[in-house]
Length: 475
Ligand SMILES: Nc1ncnc2c1ncn2[C@@H]1O[C@H](COP(=O)(O)OP(=O)(O)O)[C@@H](O)[C@H]1O
Ligand SMILES: O=C(CO)[C@@H](O)[C@H](O)COP(=O)(O)O
Image (cartoon, rainbow, N blue to C red; front, side, top):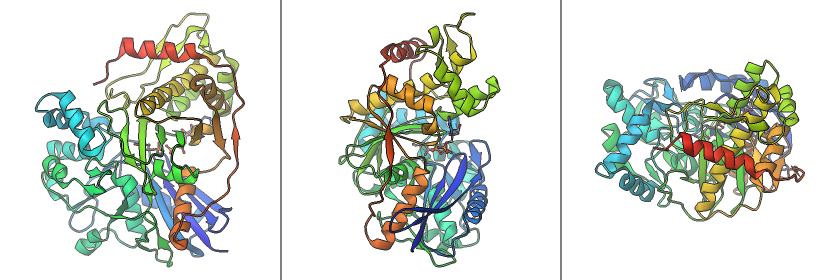
């Protein structure tokens, strides 16, 4: 049996799966936690990866490996290959002003014109999650660090590079060995997915110079070897890897509930949304991945379960025991600010409280309704870009929640398909690794179940939308 490994280096943890390259059967797996916080020394990702690999029984018998990772994180390296400062993650909002400036400057002070400009230029508005805005923040706030930047890469690029034996001290030769893939490059703000080319001018303008960037490898290209001789695949951004993991093809719509909430479609043409709601990313096979991402998903469940002092299983039971609409209680979930809509300074709020409805079941359900409604808005934005969803493939840690499944069916009004529990980002990376060995993506069978149809509750989404529009105006 030939074995392949897939990695998901996500916001909260690192997961490793080892699968049979031929059938896709799971052979071994491992997991390790990442530190809290929105800036992280990448060495923590590498040590978590080592721990997860050890837990998965090591890589000695593995023939190929690929890394999927959280997108957009700014990893800056000096000329020796050392990390200059902790990476700023996708959910770090300190570059919100830089984002506003970058957009306004492109429109000579007119933000709407600036937004239209960026939509055409890269397909994505540079909001604070996007790497370009983090580099601009670095230039504006840490000019000495900005001047030292010899190379910029993303979390998955950096981990693949370390697996290939590079690291601090590997110097110019090491920096030249950096590789990425089109899906993750498309989330930087300095890559044009529609042209498959970096936008060095944007980088030069906002960082102050154009550093070395990882070469963009093809979807099935090997980018090197591990110490034990396994081929390393190009890897992918985590959403594109999840798309690979569930075998999504053109027309499929995937919704993921992890730290971030995302809803995306595989498309055969690029998107350019000047409202900024939909990011014009690429997938990991040569197609496109128009995507909406929110900052507030499963951590709203974690926080609510925490104040209710219940486990996640109890939280889900509580949520399922309340009625749609929570007897008038409604939550806006912007606990960590928000990216879509673009409200980096927003906070969460609870509405319609009465003594009668202020109960644990209603609080739990209001958290789930809020997150699902925020993603229903994401789906609406995708539909405005021409995506015609026939059904939703639900993935991520939160997809295991029966409350999420049930409430998604009620709110979205579409069939909801939940693939058998698995690590879909890591699985997608493993599938890519198998593809690197075989020269084509394998067809791995996987089970999935459709959530039973249920009576729609349109009033839940209507109330949510009216609260959002009365309380917040996106930037
Ligand atoms: N049964 C469940 N019900 C609700 N949330 C869950 C459940 N199982 C896992 N989660 C949530 O999934 C999250 C982790 O999902 P994951 O997709 O691994 O996140 P990330 O990729 O951002 O690290 C945790 O925040 C956890 O609360
Ligand atoms: O920023 C985005 C997508 O644009 C996020 O989806 C990150 O890629 C993090 O993902 P998770 O760790 O929440 O899975």
